[in-house]
Every structure is written in structure tokens, then in C-alpha cells.
Image 1: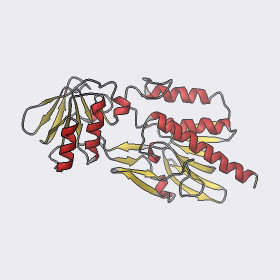
Image 2: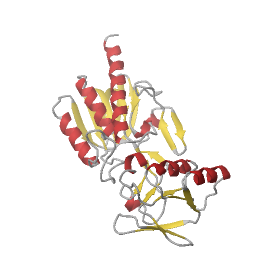
Image 3: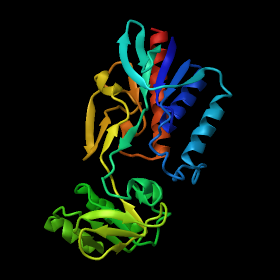
Image 4: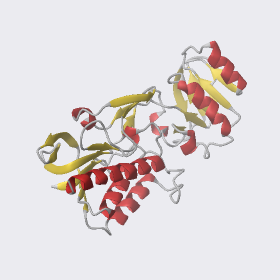
Length: 301
């Protein structure tokens, strides 16, 4: 019986494991080893780790955890999780069963990329989701934004802090007059044709090809795609969900990671639309503290 099982072993899960380990809790981390940020060559905005490859950050995290004694790791895909008389029973796809007093969900999300030829292979390299993560590397370059929903207008405007050459590609979607006026005020131009493919050498982006009209020379494309949860365990356990921004449904949590399901905590990209490596790590720490406080209350009840 573990004090806690953490489902997910990236930034949120590892930081939660560190905090719980230092609180002298017995912890099992279950990880599929399919992190969302694997395509990116480097993580940014993470103090002391800026520019470090995501896999290296995870390696360092696991290495540091080895100096403690109460955290174990297991590679596996969780199939089910359910309450039991003593806490929770977690079953892997291979049938292995683990038990714990508490659960911490940190399995993250996956991006549903637009079906545009040449986009997926450039994801994280010259096609990006977050200006705060990748804007510095794309600074002063001609950039484009791929329309997903009305928030794409905000994304195009925000990018003006990194480049004065921004074009919003609406991909035939209609813009209202208010959006057009705002884009014009921020010097964002518009292309309305349908995008059919991205071209460039290797994973670099050089031009966007439309179904009509001239190609658009660009060095970076930003898109905020809709997302799906990597795991349905939160839904299995009846955790309340919320859509804080269009296309991103998160597990509803309190300040210390509590979910609406008793004994279940959540952290990382699945619990917040503020999706950066450093934010995931921070929510992991907060959820671990909340979980430990709950265990302490039970220990001395």
C-alpha cells in the first residue's frame, strides 16, 4: 500500500514525487513515457533549466529522486482506477494492480493538430503553440497564426511583442468587424485562403501554401490546437471538469490540487490552461502539499 500513486511522470508528476518524498511518504509513479513536450528541442521559461531538452529535464528529475528512498517508478499505461476500502486500486493495461491511500493525476494532455500537410513534423520546431515558450526563438521573424477559434485573434495580437510582421491565416473562417478592427490596430495582416500545406527544408518552415493566391513566406507558425486528456482516469473517478478557455477542458481543482473526487488530486497541463513546464512543476508541488496535508489529518484523526 502506497501513500500516493502519481499517474504521470513528467514535470508535474516528478515535482509532486519530490515534495512527497521529502515529506517521507511512500510514492509510486506510473508513467507511459509519452510526454506532450517530447517534440520540442528545448523547454523555456524554466529558471535554471531554460533551453534544456525536455527529456533531459525528466532525466535530471529522476536522478535527483534516486537520492531519496521512498519513490519508485513503473512504466505502464493505467487502464482503470477506482476507490477501495483503504483508498484506491489502480490497474494497468497488463493487469497489474497497485493500491494507495491517495491519487495524484498528472498524466497531461495531447494536442489535436490540424490536418495540414507538413505541420505535424514541424510541431515544436517551427510550428508552436505558445509565444511565451517559443517567441524569443522566433523574434523579429515573419510569423503566422493558424486560425482555430476566436482566441486566435488574441494570439496574433500577443505575438506583436516578438515580431512586427504577423499574419493571421483564417483558413476560410469568417472574421467579424470587431476582430478585423482590432487586428488592424495592432498591425496584424490577414490571409483568408485555405491552407493546404507547409513547406521548408527539414523541420524548418519557409512558406505556407494556400489553395489559391501566392505562397506566404514565413519562418514560424503559431497555433493553439484543441486538446484531449492523455487519460480518462479523471472521468472514471467522477472528477468535475471545466472549460476555462475554448478547446481546453481541464480537471477542476482547488489551490492545493484538490479535485471534486475525494482523495484525488490533479496537477499539470490537465488541470490548468497555463501550460508551461515551470507551471506544471509548480502545480505538482502544490498538489503534493495538499495531498500530504490530507494524509496528516487522517494520520492524527
